[in-house]
Image (cartoon, rainbow, N blue to C red; front, side, top):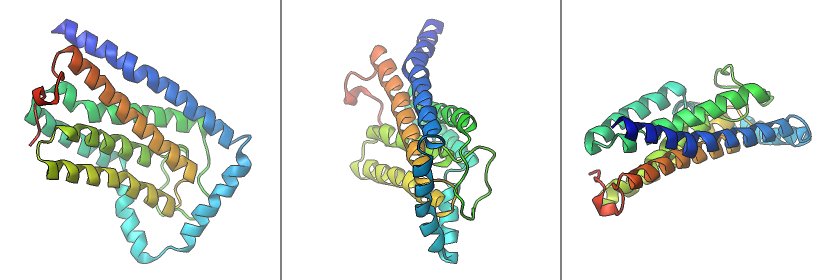
Length: 232
């Protein structure tokens, strides 16, 4: 069993952490370009933020506040822990159940280091949310919600009932889009901030799920979909 766990850990480093370092490097490189050679493009981006700020209303301020909070660290962690516990209870497969946790952990590590290295200022409009200590680029809210809910979409293939599988998929794809719009509307990020944040979350979810698929195949658990324990 110890040998199996060591192999799981080595594969995690090779298939998720290693590629994550490459993703971090690319994100930082693009961030430096936005704050350097592409600074003119960065200023032009703020037209979107100013247009959205000019269309604000009390109703949409309230709605987007809720959407924005869905990407808050405490919400993302809470949902992840709850769903991970349910998955482990239903499947007894700890590799499968850890996918969301790995996805958001990898995303958060890339985001925090990149944001502190790049240090991009937030858009020059009024901010409707408290500004966290990290910089504007990339968006942590969008990255975290994308990593979490896309990992749910990938795992939802194990749900037996088609109507439930599709319902979960649609809702989980919708949440990151709502968070993205809210963060733009509330003046917290530029368009490239949320785009790179979403890409970061997407790639981290795929890396986490790819690690699981590889380890499951190695263990002979996923040779066919019918052999995998189903979620109902």
